[in-house]
Length: 192
Image 1 (cartoon, helix red, strand yellow):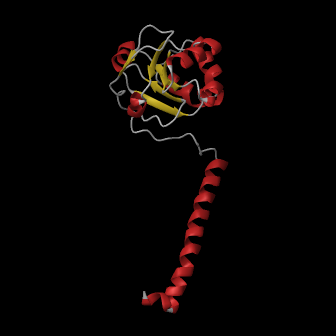
Image 2: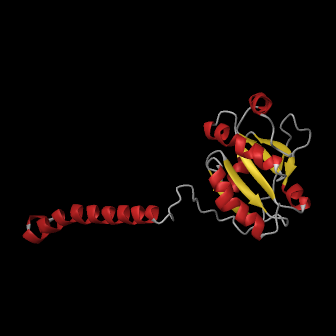
């Protein structure tokens, strides 16, 4: 601690906050530059599952559905499928619901997973807003969500015809996201 009393020690102590502020400022400028060029995406959450098979799971049906969903079902579908984790208590889920409805009307299969929701609340949500889901299950404990890397709802995953996760979107889907990110993937992969 004797070095703190020296002039070199005092200069080092004064330099540390300045250096930290400079590093923070540089990071902020880099963020602004990415925003300026349109390369900053606040929803870009890296997923180690991209390019890998869907996690192994089996979930029970969420009424009004009568059959649940499993990883084997996704592989057996042999087509592009969106898997959407949602909840009745989730405001962004309510916001994205019309986008899901449009995608379903356009013929894209969407498999919904009611995440940490009650059976009755999720059923009421779909009864009031309409059901865009081709298949519907419930993940009451959130265990399957953890296996997918879900950290909040809504989250959407694009699964290819071989059961491989090709894309993840954390947050509410919007028309812009569908147009700029999802549709190019589907067109490039001969999807829906």
